[in-house]
Every structure is written in structure tokens, then in C-alpha cells.
Amino acid sequence: MKMENQRYLQEGLDIKKLLLLMKRKLWIPLVAMVAGALAGGGLYLLFHLVLLPEREYQAVGKYYLHFNCEPEDYNQLSYNGYTWNDLMDTDPILDYMMEQLSDKVDRETVAAATEAEILSDIRLLTVTVTTPTPQLTTSIIEAVGASLVHLGETDELFRGIEIYGVTEAAQILWDNRTQAALVTGAVLAFVVSVMVLAFYYVLDDSLYVEQDVQRSCGLSVMGMFAADGRETGWGKVFCANYAYLCGQLGQLALLGIEGKEKAVQAEAMIRKVWLEGGSGEAVGEQTATSSVVEDGLHPANLPALESVGLPEAEEDYQRLRQKEGILLVIRFGGRNGRVVRGLLHQLKLQDCQAVGVVITEADRQFCQSYYNKRLRENS
Image (tube, rainbow, N blue to C red):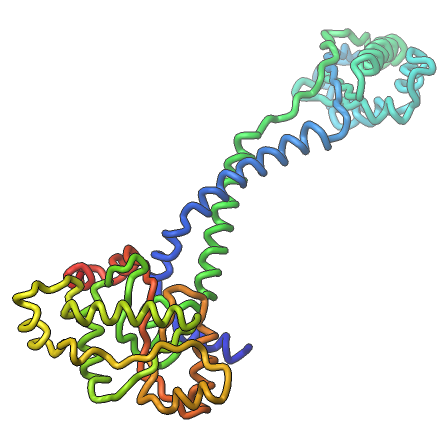
């Protein structure tokens, strides 16, 4: 496993191939974005509308404090802005509140529901009451007012405490950020899906182009044929490679990595290209002889090929050893890199000589984009 990882690192990354392959799967990030948006918005609504604690109701009271001293002495008062929240929970105030409430609620609940603060002016006290029901909120805010008025009448520090105003108990509305949740879910899903796609193709051992075959198997690609039956601009390339590398050899085995049927299909394509003079277009009757003779592609010189499948028994290897070479037929993007490497290892052990590779079922649009002008000019 360690050696396999080192091999991936040493091979480097074909960025152009990676982008072209991912382009064919653009629908996956788009679908992921829609699903992510729905999931983000759905989870947000589920959390806030179903799983959140029970609804809360709030009322706010404003009280004006008439201190029994001059304004310059306010800073010396014990009732300052930092102590009112604690004072609301002490006996003089809380006891009177509990008398107003009788047995409706316990002291701890009242203390937890009440929050007092001085926002700016030390003479203006703001008390906020929050409870699970509007009735309880109203009862507590009324008790707060009565208790503060009573405090102003009994505490010598005050000339009196006046109720400025009290709001009605109202439900606290949650901050609706559904749109932000939708966008966040879509962006996260898009990023994750692109990363997964990139990771998938980086680890993909499929063979797509000649560089893949050369790095993975150490063999050269002699030809590449498209999945639609049309040659990919490699017709002349294959014929030239075969004539130079294999023209002096006898019969070769055309070994289909995915079975003999694939080898038979490749053999038919090779014969078709050869008879068409390697141009990808059938030559006319009058020019056929001169064209094929000039190019050395006379029908009499058709490649001597025998289509075979993967060897399984000793007699299969024996037949392969009798051939003067083996051409591997590899399907474009067939996730077969490990199979090819394993087969080549076994062929080497059996003294069977692989001389090249033919790639079949290639994506013509991919090939045009990957090879740019070179392919278009030859096709």
C-alpha cells in the first residue's frame, strides 16, 4: 500500500485531464447544491420550529426613580445601575412581589424570569420579565410594578417610584435566517462534492490517454478508437506505429482486458482503418490502390491478429508465447489500471511479450478537448 501511494505521488497530476473528467460530472455538484440548500433550510426550520425549547413571552416595564437627594449625590447611592438586577431578587422587593402573586409561582421562577437594568439615566429603571406563558408574564410584571411603588414609599432613599409604562406580554420572535441557511447548505454541499469528485479522479486508476498507459504500464499506445465507431484521429498514427513497430513481426495476439469480445471489436476497427488508408475515410475505387500502396497499407499487408481473452490456463499462456507479440486492448476509462498491471506482471513471468496498447471506446469529445488542434486536424 505504501509503494502504491508513492507511485501516485511520483506520477504527478494531469490537471487538464482532471478538469475535463470533472466537466462530465458537473451535474453532481449542481444536484448537491440543491440538496444542500434543502437540507440546510430544512434543518434550520426543524431546529427552530420543532426542537427549540417552548415559546417564551416577554413584557418590559419602565420605572422612574425619584431619589431623596440632589443629583450630584447620585453616584453615592447604593441603588446604582450595577446592583438593581441583584436587588430585585432580595427579600424587601421579592417578598412583596410574592405577596402579589400568592401561590401562582415559586420564588425561584420569579427571580429567574426578572431582569433589571439601568440603560442610561440612573433614574430610569428597565425591568424585563420573560416566561413560557403570557399570563404568567403579565402577573409577574404587575407584581414588579407594585413592589417598586411600595419600595418608593417605604425606603427613605426615595421620594417615590413612578411607573412610566409597561408593555403587554408578547411572544419573542426568533430571528428568521432561513435564507442564510439555504445559501450555507448549498455552498457547503458544492465545495464538498467538488472535493469528493477531485479526490475520486485523483485515485482513479483508469487509463484515458497515452501518458496514463506509459506511466502505469510502461507501454506505448499504438492507437485509440472512439466509442461511436468513428476513429479519433489516430488512424494514421496507429497504421504508422504498427507498420514501423510490428510490420516485421508475424502474428500478434490482440488481448482484450475485458474479454475476447472487446478484442474482436478492436480487430474489426483496426482492419477498417487499415483498409481506409489510415485516414478515417474510405478511399475511392480509382485511388484506393495508389493510396494504400503509397502508405504501405495494402490489403495483403493487413495486420495478422488473433483476438483472445484473458489467459486463464497454461495452454492459454503457451499460445501467447507462440505469438511474436501481444497488443493489449484497454477500454477508455474502464477502472482497469490495476488489472492491466497485474496482467503485465503475469505475462512477464510467462515470457509473453506485450508490445503495445490499443485504447477502445474513447470519448471523442474528451479526446478533441484534450488533444486540441492535433486531433481536429487529423480527424
